[in-house]
Length: 345
Image 1: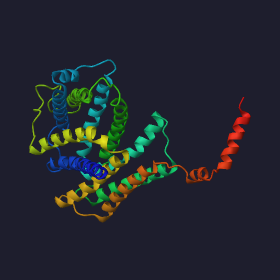
Image 2 (image 1 turned 180 degrees about the vertical axis):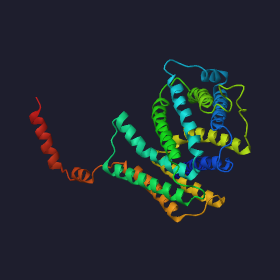
Image 3 (image 1 turned 90 degrees about the vertical axis):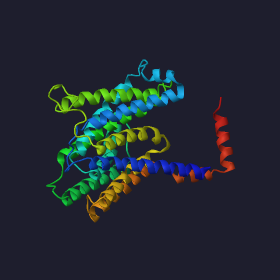
């Protein structure tokens, strides 16, 4: 039984790594001459619509029309899921802006900065402190990520330097995603009267509304837009690759919410870091990049540092204390008992 459970966890881990790796790769594939011709927010809008259809279908399958109605009800206090959805929608838009300015491998590696950002955020919001070893690993990982970006940018054809705007967008996206993750982690475990499908449906609905609003303001030349008569169509410049991006958005979101229940924090962080290596090798296999040993070693270093950071969080009991407990003899126990009896009223 233990072996089957281990195989199941390994299978989920592989699916998670592939989902994290393929998503930036398909976005790269959808570009034409390195640029996104379609509206950057349109795949996010369509993916959340598909997510709503999927979770409502699950609710119908589990509870019939009663479950579907629950997906559209907002119990008292459940509006927090709408707020979480708004934050995730903003993160989706920042992700597409970031991917428009850099390659998928660089983007995925920069996402590892979430360890440092999360550590600072948790210290401020919850008072959670990191050990000296964890801070050292976080600083080392940040330096390795910075070195990778410089090496990768310097070796890319046609690149004149580091995409500073793209880097800023990734860091902003990481901050938004970390805050949304802290909220969702706390709230998804509550509201026991609501099914998971109902919670996700509310989040998806708010993400659709927020994504439409963001697109209308940030990309007014494409529908949806406040320039109704002048804007281009929503599906303009959409190709099969754009539909693949949409499906990738949808699957990545659902996999994150459903499969991560079977993975611990260390496996999740290592999986996201390993996705960098998969993207790196995939780009070489596709002929869109050449093998750079320095960049590969730096990416591998980040994976190892992420693993060390996860292990550093596990604090074991000091062996000396356990040894002292083992040395406590029967005579010592008797003396303790006598002392306690003497002090008792």
